Length: 110
Image (cartoon, rainbow, N blue to C red; front, side, top):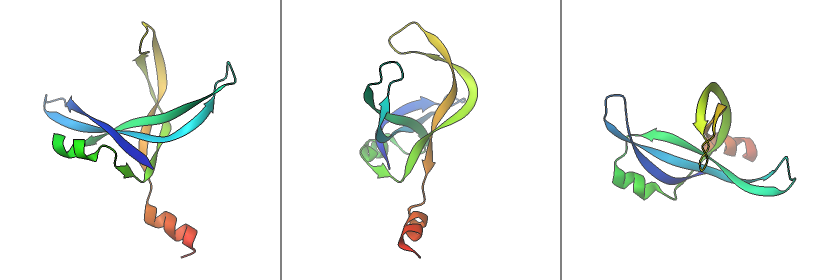
């Protein structure tokens, strides 16, 4: 499951406003390579929307079936928040929808 945690107003190439929904996946425990200690992490992704501000705001907290998956992409520059460092990333996070009906059929023996 993913949860809508926020929405943001953006502009398209024609300078028109549209909204995106910010989604967060389930919390995962990840072990740091350098220290071996665990930390909690949740993947985030944004999806475009044709919804107005009020509808987007009302959706905050709503859960949808699916997951957020790390996928390879063409390299792009990313400024590390809180620093002056810029790195090249070759991945992005995308929302992957899961058909709940198909999962139920597999697990129910239908």
